[in-house]
Amino acid sequence: MVSNKLNWINEGLDNLKGQELFINIRTIDSPVGAEIIVDGKRVLNFCSNNYLGLADNPTLKSAAKRAIDKYGVGPTAVRTIAGTTTLHLELEKALAKFKKTEDVITFQSGFNANIATIPALVTENDCIFSDELNHASIIDACRLSKALVIRYNHCDPKDLEKKILSKGQSISVRKKLVVTDGVFSMEGDIAPLPQLVKIAEKYDCMTMVDDAHGEGVLGKNGRGVVDHFGLHGKVDIEVGTMSKALGVIGGYVAGKKLVIDWLRQRARSFLFSSAMTPADVSACLAGVLLLKRSDKLVKKLWENTKYFKSEMEKTGFNLGKSQTPIVPIMLGEAKLAKEFSKLLFDEGIFAAAIGYPTVPHTKARIRVMISAVHTKKNLDEAIDTFKKVGKKLGVIS
Image (tube, helix red, strand yellow):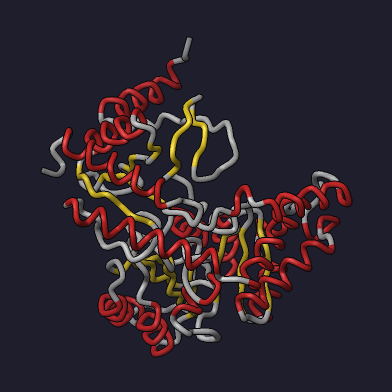
């Protein structure tokens, strides 16, 4: 029996269920690929961030196994005490070369990278200008920093400059930081980084981009949004993750050696949480080297993306403002999105409904994630199923 002091949780859960916002967590029983087994059912996978199909790549799996044989399964220490192996240093060196930056520091996840970095750069006497649709990890990191947070309109450089002039210049601050996602995970659009960087430089602001969904997707060989716009050396802090296009786990920050040295001394999840496991580090390293050698998978990803979007637009679906392999099928209400996702699953297509609080109340959607390992047959099957369900629910005619 739940005690009275926890009754508010029951009420909250009932409220979520009543609004069709309760999350039912499905169970995967196979490697992540174009086809997976979900809750015992084999379906086509359009849910994961496995952009390049590396989550089940033989080269990465072999690297992980070799690392376990040599180093064991875990570091059992933080990096600064006894958790740094030669593998960690090799990965950071390879990432720095790949990203064309002076240095890199790695973390246990992309979320941890943001949580560690922002509070290490700005404090209660400083100011952060943050895109209104930035990832939750950026939002939480800004809160932890205790800096003044000023949100600017999504992907709107003019509003950023207006906010800097009207608020940032009128308060006494030591440091100012402009932070944005590179690719926005729910919209699939790309930050106007050149304009943001120009404004930041004009007003002496540091710049930080979280490129979780740009890594392996944008730029030469998937080097990310900074490479996509040719802004090497112009962005102060590049945050990335190895859990999406690289198919493993882990986060990192790339930038000038001065910045990375500071993070090694002050980034709390680096200082107070155990290091990435040897298997993960080795698999990530293999993934970085694979991308450095070839852009074949990146090209295939974009070929699939363009085909899927083109065919879906012909049917009349609203794909929002997507510029990337993240394809939101805009539906509006959470109840409709959940029913749409359920009917897709019944037909063998796994594509998740996204609702509040991940997106605003009236902007629920099915978020489709395209991968390089999807075949044309996979894509055609998904397109046909979307048409079928869309007509059944009255979304398209």
